[in-house]
Amino acid sequence: MHFAILGSGAVGGYYGARLARAGHRVTFVARGAHLRAIRERGLLVWSPLGDFVTRADATDDPSTVHDADVVVVAVKGYDNATAFAALPAMVGPQTLVLTLQNGVESADELAVCVGREKVIGGPTYVATGLRAPGLIVQNGTHRRIVVGELLDPPAQVTDRVRRIAEVLAAADIQAEAVADGRVPLWEKLMFLSPLAGLCAAMRRPTSAVWHDPFAREVFLAGAREVEAVALAEGVPVPIDATDRMISYLDALPPSMTPSLLIDLSAGKRLEVEALQGAVVRRGRKHGLPTPIHDTLYATLKPHANGAAV
Image (cartoon, rainbow, N blue to C red; front, side, top):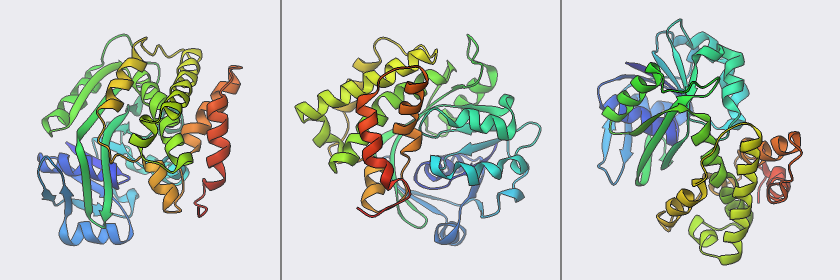
């Protein structure tokens, strides 16, 4: 299959590299020094699973990519306006758009650009960082993608979702096909939004927040806020979502640091609108109080455009 990676940084670049290594045709959409490095030296991945270099096409002009079977959208939420404008030229009659973005709002935005029938997606769980141009470093071995229908999800897993999951799994990606991709997206938001928000607000890594009794209680209260908003949105998050989330967090490596804190510390733009902002806006739409997220949103919003800290 031919995969075009729109957003070839730490997440998109990592999965694109694994797909290319498995023999698929991959076109990376990148820019600047990262683009030059991919063209000149290939994309290098350092991983506990084994280091490797993959060579693939790379361009800074997405309009030249016309024949992809799947466009993987892995840009940060704050780049949606620019990135999504490039999609109509990339999407052909048979192209699917697979979004791996954080938050729960990109599917509706993508539908406006390419049509509802094109969009599938779900959350990804991977700890990677762009160490240098052309170099992606993976921390831990998680490399999970959950794929499902996001708009008008059916009762059963669709053939196209199952096929994409099979292709991902064959590329050594821990892929799971589900009928309703909204459910795992909201489950991820339940832990990512309050946890990343607290880490950024406290300037502390995940383990420091998770193992502080007071911060842990605040985090769990924030997770319950997201759960309430999800149910109000008609998304049937499972009753054991919190228990599974706790087990996942207990197993995280001590060095794990959310990208929100990394970006804040570096003075970069933040995904605050896609995370905390989305919870606040949707909570208000349903008349639900979200005091934890109100506070996190107010704390982080001034830095959304990359203000120095």
